[in-house]
Length: 231
Image (tube, rainbow, N blue to C red; front, top):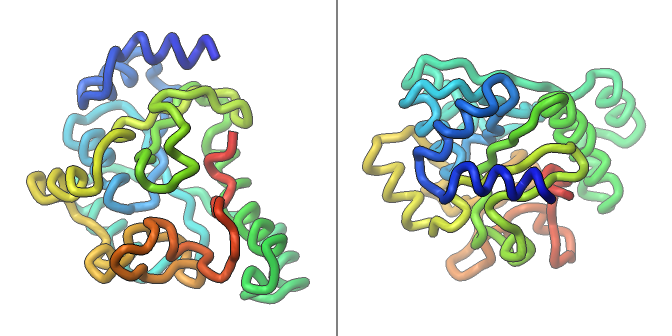
């Protein structure tokens, strides 16, 4: 897509300065989505510590771990910057839970995807409405289906350009950056949770298991995504 190539040419490469360049050129039209994992905390630090005019938002599904709310609050205390919050549509959620029950996502892939659609995808659509640049914390090594992505890409579904500033970082590099800059992070990472989503749908992984093996572990699928990053 031409617009993705234009953005890639504008920022030249993946550096912390790239975010400042994007913020200057797309003021008011650039956002960053955080779920408070290691990677997102790194990017939040880059934005907040340099006072970059990039709105940071999160999607509160209502099923977060207590530890996630803890690091969310620690982030607010540390940087004294707002994190805009988007919640599921109350009517859609009420109807779904009334019909299917609170844990129907365990019963079928269809139910799980519907739950993700209501709790994540629909709020994301509102958060990204009329924006031009979406910053994410995606890294290439997080799962096999992400290795064929590019660090700047066109998102057809949302009609904007996605930029992944730490796309080529390793997990060790992420952890080193967090340590060096004393960035608050989710304590579940120290308990075997490399990827943290909703509490009923996330478990710790054993040494050697795939990075995302703890997400929707009861599903027998090679590609397990919630729909947030579908093109």
